[in-house]
Amino acid sequence: MEACSSDDRIVAAFLCGSRARGGADEYSDLDLGVITRDDALENLTAERTAFVRQLGQPVFMEDFGHDRIAFFILADGAECEVVFGREAALEELDVGPFVTLVDKRGILDGAEFPLPRPDPDERREQLRQVLNWFWHDLSHFVAALGRGELWWACGQLEALRRYCVNLVRIEHGADAQDEAYEKLEKAVRVSELAALQPTFCPMERGAMLKAALDIVSFFRKHAPRIAGAYGSKYPAELERLMCDRLDQLSLTSR
Image (cartoon, rainbow, N blue to C red; front, side):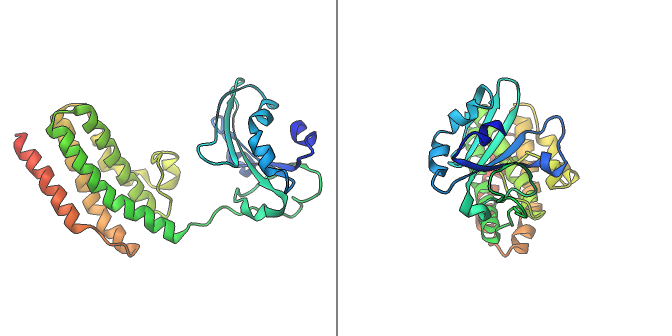
């Protein structure tokens, strides 16, 4: 509040996320919003490191490719995310409920920042990727295990498992994520993933092959149905080809 109040580029600031919604716990980070004058947004985001240093000493700071966001961890342990916006484009902020911290011009009075709505086209594209990339990565698993490269095979096994998790996320109306396990218990009924639990296995050829077979069985059980529900084309011929390769690997491993 002190940093924003003393900076004439900033017209408002607010708390959002789980702490504004009343759902925070001891592990929750701080989600903050900073609204600038229209002509000051680029200047402030370019100098966001200096801005963050007014809050404490950052030991980690990244934007992960987002030019209007700063993720940082301070030396005192505080983990924070700040989203920057401009006064004339409040509608671009989709952060949900908020608590006003600074409001020099009253622009937050009566303002609402609804959470982002699911994009059907984006969801279908996520599903298309899951449906096709699963089988592509299965090809890599077969090659890795066939060559005895167990570290590579282990990495591909994890990728296949994440595709299955994201498939169930999509079925429940949630977005697929690179960090597929993040807050998973809030997105799906994890009991639906019980068949995947034994696939966390030792880095041994036999155990990894069995885990791959179980993961493929899970995917084949769910994927065609979910593809049909979203009107997506299921790559049946690709499935047949890759399953033949996995079956051949199983035969040579006996």
